[in-house]
Image (cartoon, rainbow, N blue to C red; front, side, top):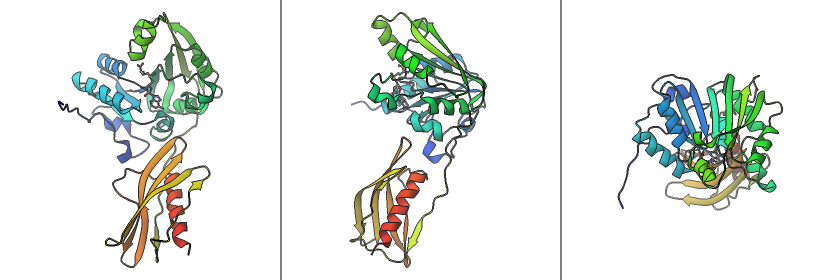
Length: 307
Ligand SMILES: C[S@@+](CC[C@H](N)C(=O)[O-])C[C@H]1O[C@@H](n2cnc3c(N)ncnc32)[C@H](O)[C@@H]1O
């Protein structure tokens, strides 16, 4: 198989960056910022960036295959005004962006999740809209194009107290020839719905900030008797694999933490240092110091204390 390399330079390494992100810092020049959510293959994002060199574009997408295709496009077109964030928008918009940072935010054909029981998966619910309002400049625009009237209607019903004035209109499909746009045209759709949400007042749904992490030192650790309990409250912590290496005096415990749609899967180490044992997240796992991560450390500490 022929190996093809693509530059990862447009990817923003959000785990290693200060959060909220200073997006202007990610580009070589400061220009107005526009965000696309769920860019799929990235054709619309890349074309807009090509046509508007005076604007910096940020694409947010959760699937690696899509990110990879977009990176290829960006490389082929030699675009220096696009950056990509690979993350789930359901938590990323709450954790990564500063207030008032975008001039415009848009999304083409977000998944409508038509079944009632899947409603929780739909993007652009009330709190999400409030947060997007917070990220938009004064007078900024959020717009969504969909082929699905029921989804458009559902989003409209989510706009209470979001600070947006909403307009729903039918638009000709030719301007939205993305993978999904073409698919719906091939299926016979002759127009799409465009929802335009204009920011009229500011929402104070600020980004979730990170806390200082507390690690623990203990005098005594009994690796064979150690058994931490899962946590089940506003965050969920499950403990999985556990390894103890007597030569290194080091235990490793895998923790999976779920909080607010955000999942972290990392290792906690309990390591002997001089006469004490240090409990902390192991390096090299790309964890970030959230409240859930702290709960996992607290649970390990409590388990170490049990005789
Ligand atoms: C129906 S596709 C539309 C793709 C593209 N905009 C187009 O018009 O062809 C929806 C896209 O949103 C992405 N997506 C869905 N949920 C997401 C989320 N929570 N965070 C980021 N991207 C998401 C999917 O991976 C997919 O690429």
